[in-house]
Amino acid sequence: MPTIAVLAAQRNGHHPNPGVRAVEAAGGKPIMAEASVGPDVLDEAGGLLVSDAGFDHEGPDAGALALLEAALAVDMPTLLTGKGMYLLNATFGGGEPSSIEGGTAMGSVSAGNEKATAPGREARRQIYLSPGSKMAAIIGSAGMFRLQSGAWSCRMALREPQRSGRLMSIAYQLDDGVIEGLESKEHSWVIGLQFLPERAEEVPASFNSLLLGLVERADDFGSTGENRT
Image (cartoon, rainbow, N blue to C red; front, side, top):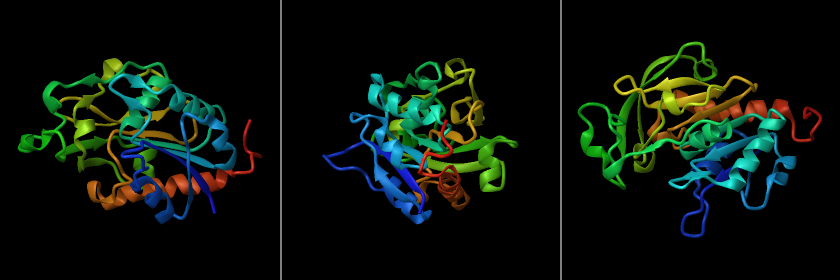
């Protein structure tokens, strides 16, 4: 069974379940990764899921940066969601997302859904997924999709001036250019998303293929180290 290291934020002393449950549902074996411990946990893994972790209003977490850098160094299949997308951009030398005052993301909520921006509430929005991206190939389509996500990411916005030139924008909001997805140009399977596909209720059903794809690639990568350089 492919093993996926899961880096997730702790809340109230416990890890949230969505990332773990999503890996299990996709046929993988999740193991929790602690950023403060170091990247040794990757020795047991064939893939990495950074589930809405590794970045806060003060910037990227040093331990999370080290963990991601170790995964990238061996071209480990990696999916980063929520705050993880900002960690990916920072790791590649990009700028930090802008913090939006008052919890309103200047267009991170689609027209007609402005009321959903208050802290602790959900925001619905439309994004455009580019044809030719790895993600489009994984889910089997490109174009417009409707999402919802938690209030934290709706108070942050990453746009083209902050994007690392080593990463490719694959999904964004048409009305204001907020980036919703990034892919590494230098790795086989490294995808960062501002939304949370591990929360099935927040995304289209086809987005479940992202977790299935991560587990499949982790199986190919192998957890014994023979594919690592």
